[in-house]
Image 1: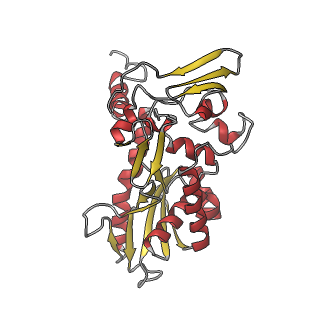
Image 2 (image 1 turned 90 degrees about the horizontal axis):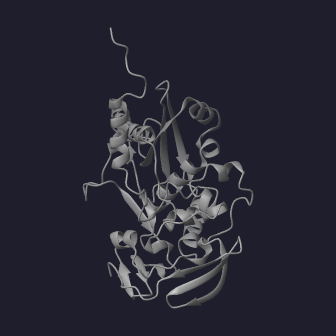
Image 3 (image 1 turned 90 degrees about the vertical axis):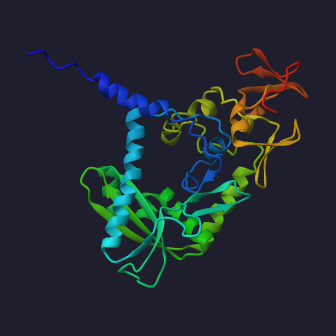
Length: 314
């Protein structure tokens, strides 16, 4: 009998490749409430300015999908207890959504529920998460606010912007299928601080300070923006990494062309793109309407030059 092929098999590779081919750039049009609890404000600024595209492996993308598929099962579990669960807004037929800061900040709720056994008359924001066994064990021991502060921050924003005073956090361990259910009380002061944080980052012209100046710091090592932040790696060419772009109420405005830019146009940018100087690892030595000259850290010179080119996609 012929031996089985060594792993990975062509079929396995093709499955993962299918996920990778459809993942897109990972850029969000808004700053997500699910991210505002990140401890590094600069990383959030990079997220919002579309500095680093995401490139996940097929295995990891499939893992993300597993978390999404689990949501329907958790809704069934809650309904089996007698709870009334709304997965979508009855008025729109879409997920409940909250927004702030001119539409630049917000997120979509996993759902809302009432008639929960712990508080039958109180509406709750629902938040569903999946965890590894190690993460789940820590969550069960410490609670979501301590173990997963980013998840807690997300729920505080949702409660504040919906006016609901309670949230139900339902977590599942992917290794054992064990569940953790925890009620969270709204903290108005905390939520307002998170919204203020989002506002500062969204409308900041320059990146906030790093969480650490040490590139080997563990939070920096694991950050998707490590190369740009600490290593001087190249930022993506989009309108949001351009010094001409400004977030305004309802979208993004280009001062170079004095026009609003759609999401697709922001991704494409134009031939007049000039990097925000903070994204270039060098010192600005000269500048004009369509160029910025730099002295790089290694002593070389570089000109970010958009002179004499035609505007594309404008």
